[in-house]
Length: 419
Image (cartoon, rainbow, N blue to C red; front, side):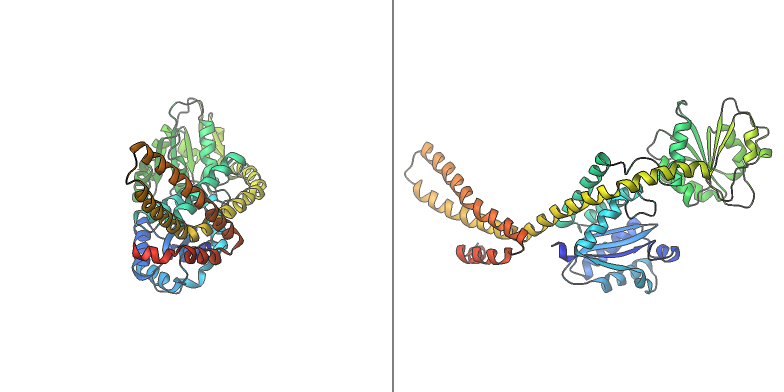
């Protein structure tokens, strides 16, 4: 069955931001497209992964449904077709290997990206919600989740902060280790600011205020993360309250400068983390007692170490993936013969029941129990050899001839039809 898996892949490697924005899908849009694929194709086991860096559609079918799926994507997003040229088609083991690398973070723009694993899990849940996840996809996804656990347990791939926003979260955590409920102020909700906030969700740093020039953007992100929000006109007041200020605001002049902070009283320390380029926090504020500034160079040093560690772990991860895909492919091949195995079991069980009924007419209860137990044991032993041979034939790639022979020997089709 693995050879029938197909993937339509668009990523940051094949498409500019403008195109990625065009075909990016929300949860509701993903579910609409899943329903379109179900209604207009015969594809099964459909998975749609859509993030800011990729839109990927996986499905199982002997037939190529790319044209129909692109038509559905055009309909769901209300856009003209023409985006298709940015998609790459993968099939079989190439598609499986790609999904493994995406879910684990090997194919991420920031290597080892932690967010992508959660995004793939969400995509799987949406497929299950719409009844588009069959046995093949269920097995594949749980195999990927198992590999993710192995990667965490057996390698250093998840160690450290490989993205600027994640490094800022870790730095804020380290700097406030001695503070019981530290107050964090995030200034600016561009791509980096949003990532910082998302990285702060489900950490010990929950007293977070989001501040932005456009208030409704701050409000929307705050509601998503469960944080407070405020407008840029309250910048000075919010800085006074905060233990850590993380700024990623664009502009030609620093938004947070020495003049703004002159009246602010710092009783212990106040940490400023500047993720902007050009810088949005004036370096001279370090002249104020208690104010400490960290810039992109400080953050980059942290991320470079993590990236090198993660790169060193790649060969081991690829070996784990190869090993696991081999096992998954064996299972997939065995799926092809499972109907034959089930028919054989049904046929032998029917024979057992008929013969048992004949011998139990005049038998005592204790004899009937022993006959039932003996006949079950005998049937299992008879089944064992052909089942093992079928599974071995799957690995050799010649299960078809043995399946046909078993159908002829036991007249499986005829028995099934009668039943």
